[in-house]
Length: 363
Image 1 (cartoon, rainbow, N blue to C red):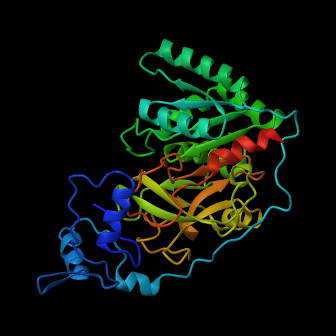
Image 2 (image 1 turned 180 degrees about the vertical axis):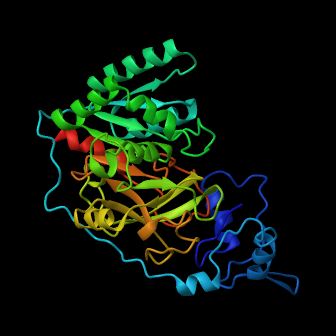
Image 3 (image 1 turned 30 degrees about the vertical axis):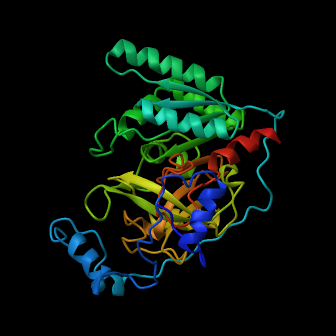
């Protein structure tokens, strides 16, 4: 099936096929025309697609609501579009590293494939470590090996995993258990505090960074009432969709290939992605440029509407950083991108996040 460009005719398609040597045994038939109206028209009958969509989507809304009600929308406060531009790009203080080493703490094959593919595109060298927690002995071995790999790497990545079935705290509770082991904690501190390395957590990895304290505080610390957390989506169930996110800060090296105001279309898939934090901590994060990205609507405006902010995160926050920006956590799956992956998806579906992290070490 071929969609005609503006001003093109069926005959011009035939000509194009002939020029390419593909016209043999091909019949060209005009099936219809694309119009601006949100409707389907055929043989004198017209279907209002707004009504069709409503009939399809509203069937079980009484049980599983999926959109913000008119009353909630009217009562919702406006969300400010945060903007923080770093005064100077973050620069790795050590010797330039042409191919920084990355350790990916992982639990599922498909996740390591996605992350490795994106890192190769950015020219980073990835070591994927699949932890083993089947026995106490295996846990001890995995802990020691993870600490060793962190010591040999410039970047640590924590992808999602659903290894906990997304029950309370999800797989984050398993991830944090490994990182709170003294060996691994000291390896992370050495990476961040003495070797100026980077960390990235996506989805459950973001949950782990928050529950460890690495974002927004920049260190592994005990959790208390003054900390941020990620909790159940406001909608009360899992959300899997494409969202738009706006770059709110370029503090982080991970964001170095982006500009404040850039909007990207990214995939989400989580049940506990609602970011909440005490107001004093939020104020501190905003002032320091630690809010990296916000959920936005089709016009690029941050919103609490479920159509834009599917988990109900405060200030429509999708991603945050440590105070120095070298640790980044976000809910959206930036790694889920590639040529032809999404169809009928509007906006820029490629977010150069991994490339920014690799660039940091090249000087």
